[in-house]
Image (cartoon, rainbow over all chains, first blue to last red; front, side, top):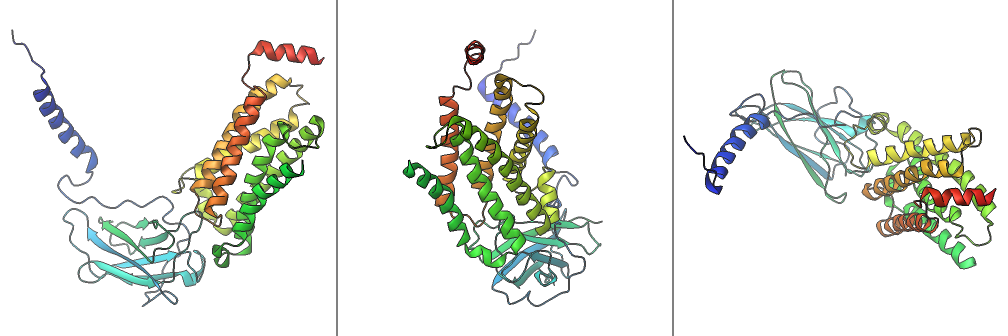
Length: 162
Length: 204
């Protein structure tokens, strides 16, 4: 008869192995070996207006919204993707047309749009971003600033085919 | 006597005055501003309630203190209605998220839960005599809801980044908690049933 001896070492090793296999299966949906797509954030689509124009700058500027757009799986940067941005700023409320604008990603999948200073609304200083062009699945993001005094904010998209 | 009333006026008046000087107001519409101040006033009324029922405000008899507690309770419910309605008009999707408990903001569920507790207490308070509730029954129902109201309101308020100035906000919140703890300790709201029964017999 074989006796299974549980000492600390083999318990840790088997336990670790079980955790590693289990956790990787749980944490990475779609593609087991790649970059997972970004989910829309709660409240991300609030006060969204369809089809905001591509602009050089929203209003008078002074605040920078930037980020990246990549493809789920291989993480390849996606160029020429339209990202829509809006927020409650010193120049208007979230739902007002002048608070909305869009920009395109460059060849490295990066975007950067100047806009008026974001100020706290509904208890948090936050911005809204959308990818809504149809080629990939629509994603709405709602990043929060660590402090209302910050003058920039980042948001990153990983898109999956629609 | 005047000192206590003055302190109360300061405890509620200072946070309101400080919020009135907030630079955030410049970027807000009138309805949003009204909604925000209705929220601050509501928190002030939450401070008044335990003071009234505990008899800590000089010059008010126990009877008048209780009557005032009833009326202020109604005013509190009204302030919350103005707060929620104003925020709804300002940004309907954000308010709907909050009311349905799917909001991304961590303070929303605390505020919404406190709101329901306030509405339930107000409703039950108006039906209490009709239903012939004994004081013991009322206490048994009102005390847990009062704790939900105080804890929910204070956490809601503290987590919000808005027009309120931080120090006066924390001071008001601390006073609300202190007044609630004191009144609950003084009135021995958790005392045994037998003691309560003895009291109600003695009263008759």
